[in-house]
Figure: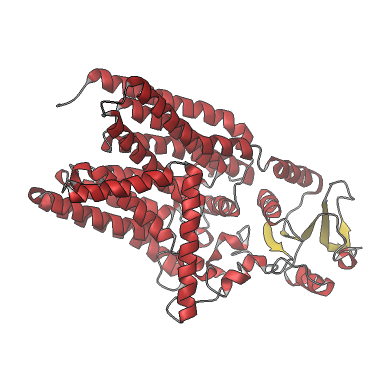
Amino acid sequence: MAGFNLKTFTKFNILFCLCLVLYFILSIYLLKYYQYDPISRDLISIMSIAKIYAAGDLGNAVNGYWGPMFSWLLVPIIYFNPTPQFTLFTTKILAIMVGFFTILGIGLLSRRFKLSTSIRIGILFASVFIVLFYVFGLNPVDLLLACFLIYYLYIIYSSNYPLTWYNGMLCGILGGLAFLTKSFALPFFLITFILFNLLHYFKDAELRKGTFKNLFLGLAVFFIISGLWGGVISEKYGYLTLGTSGEYNFKEIGPIQKDMGSPIWHGFIKPSNKEATSAWEDPTYLKLSSWSPLQSQNSFKHEINVISGNIIKTLTFLNEFSYFSLLIILFSLLFIIWQLKNNSLLKHHQIFFAFLTITMFIGLYVLIFVEFRYFYLVYFLITLMAGYFLQLLFKKPYCTREIKSILLVVFVASLMVMPLTGLLENKDGGENIYDLASTINDEYYIQGNIASNDGYMASLYMAYLWNSHYYGTSLRNWNNISDSELEKDLQDYNIDYYLYWGDSNYNSEVLVKYKEITQGKIEDLKIYRIKEKI
């Protein structure tokens, strides 16, 4: 094999294995600090759905808003022990495994950028800490999406992509798995898969037949996977859909709904079904105001404002990931323009492909809503692009061995600032609430329909741990309600226990009618048994 060097090959693989060993050692160490952290209401919903799948209740488990893949991966592990506590712990273990395969994928994808051993290992070493932060500090579902897409890009970025007939099929499978993780993958895969196949098609006339075959097989497999799931959720909701998250989020950013916020902040709200922990388990059923950017001039301006605001947020996220991110993207654009002028665009196709991927990924998200965790794939690609430019710089005659070492250390260190800071700041998250929920359950055995005056996330987490149903807070648009309204809601929604956070006396005239079961033993929390009046 031309260019094969056994010594280099062996050295890289040994160092790569050491990075993976380091990842597992640090994962085991960090697990004790993060095992009780539910991360967000999103992840609580996904864990709850996994429990429903494990119970065999497919009618209530099937969900058009949350992709099923992460929940499906949990089911075989929790099948014989689907308790909330074990499911939470299993979620952490699954996240660690997703992180492991993500690092493996980054190692593979780095081959497409033809990086030197030192740069590849530097990137993979930094990726250990980046992935650890994503595993423990943020929703791991987005990491699972990035994991599938990394392997998809590894295949589609290859110059030899058209030579193997099953490459397109593999892309279709990975795209389908990504879609089952988050419905965002549907437009992203279709746009990028068709685009990259077109680029391969025009790149080499002799390989066009292979490219066309891969395009056809890839789309066929992807449409089969997405179509089957679309049929299942369409049957449940009674209308044709491939996912409801995009529609919900688009409505929520509308000119009317944006000021009102999600319906979960408008007082008590019944959980999605009889097995659901909360209404957030399937936001498809939440009622929001419809709108269209084309319905009026003001609506169009509103969408422009949404996009511009999301672009600014995204630039902030990129800068949070690394202070060099924006510089790398700008340099990539200038590099591509320079390649176009010199008719050498496909000579360095890795940068062109990565830049297109980043553009499409960000472009789809900024239309509606953005969060830092959405852009894991973008961050990994920026890292690889930076490594590519660093390698070009290393080839310059003025770049001595000492300069190379300094630049590589600075590069790797810059990538580790954000994850290390995040890991230190977020440790022990959720442990106090977990312990409090366990203590309350041991002493008072609370179960049933739960509501609260405030503290949505803490109350939701405890309701999940109690195998109960959380009806939300009594606040309406973050304002307290009257005594008569609270009393009516407690009865109408058949609330069993009302959690009262804080030491204020608001609504005390109503609550004094019910038994407070803790007798003041818990600081800043009273629990009223609504079915037992004094």
